[in-house]
Image (cartoon, rainbow, N blue to C red; front, side, top):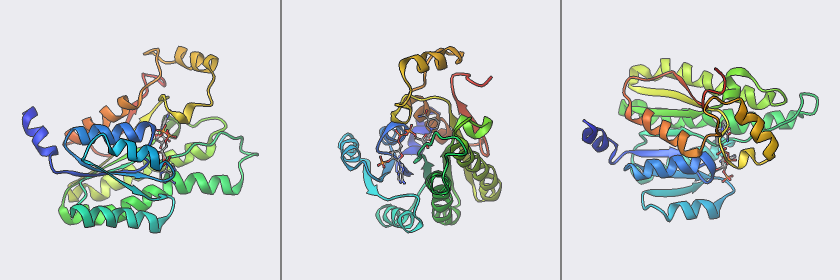
Length: 247
Ligand code: NAP
């Protein structure tokens, strides 16, 4: 049974947005180690992307700013021209913003929504047509605990992640009949550059609120991606990977 599942992953093609660092780079490596050909999308971190690609010949890098529709089209066209199909899309690219509503500018709000939410609209729009044609596919959106419960001083970020979860639920219904599954993974706090602003005292305070008494790792999220890849009957769900933080 396990052998069959492993076999099924061979010759599958994945796009992972924001694969050059943090959670995205763990997802890329986990998928490549499990037989996927992975297109690692990066925007500014070329050196990191190149280093990751050197770890596994299944990893192929492509630069695109996913907040821009034309660049997403280039990313999808590159993948189709190279491999002829897309089996898995992981919408991971994201940025955060910690500001009160009064300090949040119109351009801040635009920037967060374009990078975290419009990007997923663009990728899903472009990728789903191939998946519908194939009558199979898998889309995983990396959202956040804050999309579910809202974060103080992170309204724009929380809105973008709630929107992503909404894409998940709507597209799970719309694309299910075409044998395409769509799920979100909503991490809690994960040890990446995104949380570099936290000092040791703040980290200790957060850990004291988490039942598993630790901050998550990028690999914890990547394991969940692999779990969703191997599953058959899970769609439209928001899977929380947060050590029990919000229970
Ligand atoms: P990170 O270390 O800051 O990495 C962010 C990644 O997103 C980088 O690879 C970056 O690529 C890419 N990216 C940003 N803007 C992009 C753009 N316009 N086009 C293409 N790629 C872009 O962050 P992370 O912690 O790994 O976060 C990954 C995802 O998990 C994000 O969506 C984040 O919201 C979500 N998340 C993180 C946490 C956490 O605690 N860390 C918790 C919940 C959810 P370049 O460097 O190449 O530009």
